[in-house]
Length: 284
Image 1 (cartoon, rainbow, N blue to C red):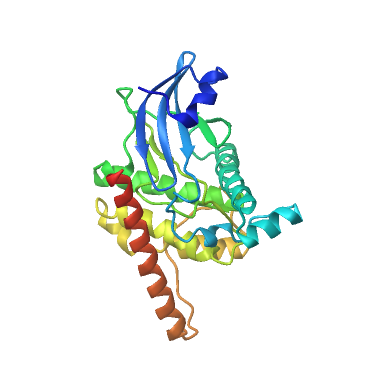
Image 2: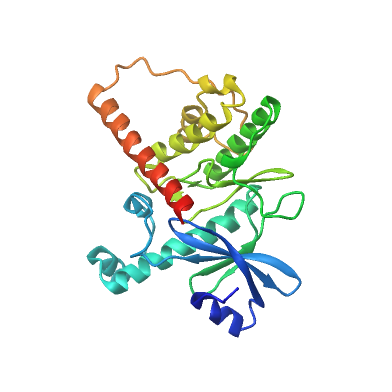
């Protein structure tokens, strides 16, 4: 295929030998399959901030540290330079999370580096060597659903144990190969200790996973893994060895009805945004 303009510098520098095909185009990036020597890899080309349609990005940027005061002020003003700095942080967040998650025992694509806003990483394939499907496109037995759900809960615990929440975990951001689920799409990963929306995002991540797998394993529908994980985390007792039960007892303190209604409205809006993003992936 014709070499995309953004990938031409990598071809000129010998980092990429050949662009084979476009794999997908989504709300934040376009992914290409590329030849690098004897290996076939992915090249994730991030879209310009003016073209990217990721919802509620401000929620994810909260708590991300900017050491340079000038950069921080530019980002707050929304200047061209500030947007460039914000994009750099967005991209660095993903590659940092890939390395951190891999070290924590979470299955993610292997990263090979970020070059001018282009992330080179492993191409996850199925048993036949084709690009692995997203979880949304996979059906499974009840036993497999229970096994893979347990794996995903273990991954959520491992993420949180290193202080990170995926932030957009769903059946659209998980690939499935012969060995089970692989977590992808991490630029929105958030600092669990520095983001005021951390608990909300953790619960949403877990609920998205549980809701999907419960189609095949109905017993999962009544579990409360998100609340259980967060409670253990807040108590300072969470570790990769934590054994989960899926059970959680609500506090006997009366709930703030207004706050509950606000949470419901927010969750509904975010679900609409997530579905719109999925539809954009299809349209592209």
